[in-house]
Length: 215
Image (cartoon, rainbow, N blue to C red):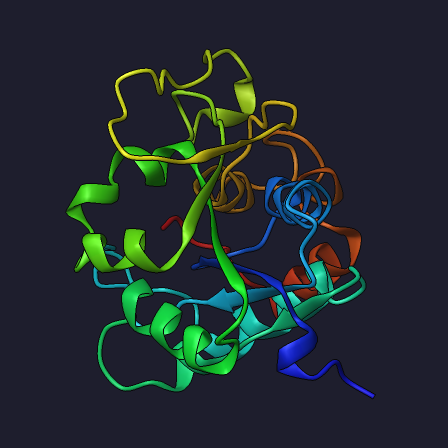
C-alpha cells in the first residue's frame, strides 16, 4: 500500500529533459535520496522545455528510459505530469502542485550546478525559492559534447547569492549532450554506451535506434 501523503515528510523534485537519462542523473538521484533523507523523489521528464532551442525526443521514449534508469531506486516515483500539461513546463507550477499534494512536507528541488547558475533566468524563480530548498550537486565547468574528456574543473559556486544545500557526490564528467554526441559519432567514438547510461537504457536506445543523428 502506498504511503499516505500525511506520512511523507521530505519530498524531492528532480526534473529534466532526460534526453537521455545517464549515469550522472542516476548518481544524483541516489545522492539526493540518501543525503536529504527523502521519503519520496519525483523524477519529472520535462514536457515542453521553454529554455531549449532544440526539439526533445518524444515524451514516451524519455518516460520509458526514466523508468529503466530510476525505477528500481527506493522511494522514486516517475512523474509524467509535465509531459501531459499543455504549454511550457515551469518548475514553479509543478512545485505548487506538489505542495498541494504534500501540504505538511518539506520540498527539495534537486539540480546541478549549471542550473543553479542560471536559476535567476527561470520563470517565477522567486516562487520556486519560496516553495522548495535547492539541493545542488556540483558539475564540471564543461558539460557539452566534450564533457567525456573529463578535463574540466568543477564549477565555482562561491558567487551564488541564493540559499542552497550542497549534495556531496563525485564530480560527474557526463552530460546528455555528450551522450548524444557520442551516439551520433558511431560506436568507435568514445566510451561504450553502457558505461555512459544505465545498461537497460543503453538497450532501449539501441532497440529503438535513438540519437543516430547529431543534435
